[in-house]
Length: 206
Figure (cartoon, rainbow, N blue to C red):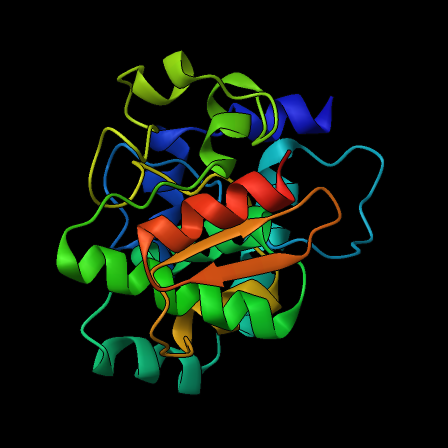
C-alpha cells in the first residue's frame, strides 16, 4: 500500500514539499515526486504514512546531491529537474558506469542539436512495452512521453535514478557517437551514423 500511496503524491504534495526541499523548486508545477524518491534501504516504522516515507527519501536525495554536484549543475546552466530526468532515462537504459556516461553524452548531444531522444525506456513507463515488443505504431503514437515524436525531455522523470545514473547525467562522456542500442543481455553498441545504427540493429536485435 505504500507504493500506491507514494504514487498518489502528485503535484500538490510536491509543491507543498518544495518549500522544505530546495532541489524541488526548479521542477515544473505539473511534476510529482518521481525522480526524487532516492532508491535506498530505509528503516520505516509500521504506521508511517506515505508522506513520512517520501520525506525520508527526499532528505536522502538532498544529502546525495551534495554541494559539489549542485555547483556543477548550475555551472552547466542546467536545472536539477533536467539532470534528474536525464538520469531516469539512463537508469532504465543502461547497466554499466562507463555506458551510463557515454549514453549521457549522447542524450545531451541530441538535446543540444534538437534531435528527438528516441529512448525506448519511456514506453515501459507509458504503456508497459520494452524495446523488443515495440511496434512501428507504438513509435508513431503521439503522447507526451513519446521521445520519437517529441523533441526535448519527457514531461517528468520515468524512474527514481540511483546515484550512478545521477553522476552520469552530471558528468557525461563526450564522443563522436549519436546512436546507441542494447541487446537482450544489456550489451551496448554505439554508432556515429544512422546507417551504421540500422546495420547493428539487424545484427544484435534479431
